[in-house]
Length: 96
Image (cartoon, rainbow, N blue to C red; front, side, top):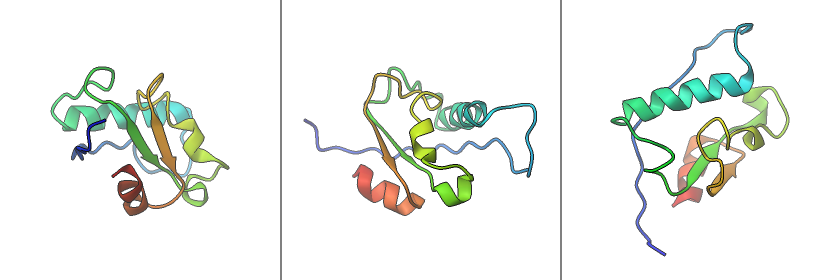
């Protein structure tokens, strides 16, 4: 197993509003992930990523066990997805 880690600087977001009627929680995650992959130079999650680290905090997401909704919308189906309930820095530390 390789001990190399790459942190990709892609950023994607759906937007911030109190109510989003046109998209589900998962659709918003998919859109944000798609934008992040584009921002990272056109990264393809199916071929360019070996494992995913996702960090979501239930308190800020507004639903329980929010990190368990992440694998499919971010492109992590049938790949290792490490979920961290906490802030982004905790996620980076756990990923490494």
